[in-house]
Amino acid sequence: MKLDRREFLTSAAATVAAANSANSFESSASPALDLGLRADFPAATKSNYLNTPYIGPPPRAVEEAGIAFVRAKSEDPILLGAMLEKGNEVRRRFSSLFGAKPEEVSFLFATSEGENIIAEALDLKPGDNVVIDDLHYETTYVLYKTLEKTKGVEVRVVNAVDGRADPEHFEPYVDDKTRVVSVSWVSHQNGFRHDLKGLSDLAHAHGAYLYADAVQALGMFETNFHDEGVDFLTSGTYKWLLASYGVAPFYIREEHLDWVVPDRLGSLSIRDTLPNYEFRLYDTARKYEYATLAFGPLYQLGASLDYLAKVGLDKIEAHTVDLAHHLWRGLLEQGLALHTPKGNGSSIVSFEHGGDPKAVESLFAKENIKVSFRENGRMIRAGAALFNNKSDIDHLLDTVKKIASL
Image 1 (cartoon, rainbow, N blue to C red):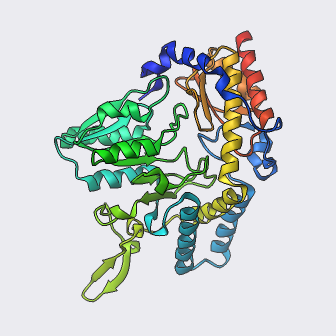
Image 2 (image 1 turned 120 degrees about the vertical axis):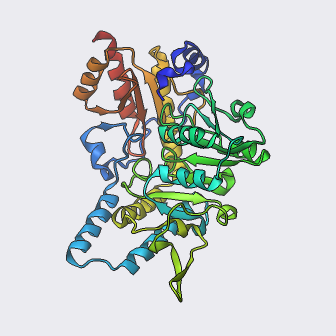
């Protein structure tokens, strides 16, 4: 599902709303807007890298953890028991950083796996409905649209208003037949940061659950899963968590562990081996880890969690959101159509550049600026990470000014 099919992105209303909120993005940080971390990130020393919403480059500590794992496998392979214990250690670190219990966290292989597990466990039937919004990722559309055809489930899609999908926009769609409300916590489309607490309160008031795709959220800001009220959440680790591919932390509130059954089983699901080929499975979230984990990326995730904790998620949030606000204001002053809404709390800014897509891509390549070109090249998505600074944003703004003369 494309952004250019959505009314809020093609109407003049989004631009008007942005203009009305120009004064909401005053920078409150120091003029330098720099955490002094650039040397830790090789990618940031080779280009003006503003493409973390696509792929987050790891710091050297994460790179070194990956190299050390491969070297150990080459010279003296780490035994399975030690790798499993490392997984438990990383589980504890992740849980501590994001306000969960270790028993509520498992490691899947990709973000989409988590929602598939939940959709299967819900055992959806005709008459049930699921509520999503048009800022979500494609996985959720294909999952629930397929269940709409095969199980008769009603899929209700909330239309964003001026780039926002707030709880009040969801309210008319959620009723006592709603089984799950599903959102991308931070939208990959325009960076809108959903109000999870408001959505969880709405869903729970109707006996429904809240699921969040958190791949564009975790590592970007400080949060506590219990305080957010979210029931289920999954995130890849190759974006704002600054790690690698093949590991996706899956969070499930403790109270749901009994009824959310695994959709597949394997040797790592086993807690105890019993006589006569019987087994006792884990009763924690570990039961969803059915097969050999991607241990190399798991070791890298451990290093990235240490790095993020050392810097401080609160500092990362303040820094990167301030940079995003600086970019947003600069683009508005140039009269560009902003898809990222007023008062947004994420590091992502999306906008229409107004030029010829091929010419603009060539300009950005010449300037050595890395961003994502979306919607057939008409839209630019940029994301300020912890290694970026005000000079990076000013460079982008100066380059955007050149588009008019192409």
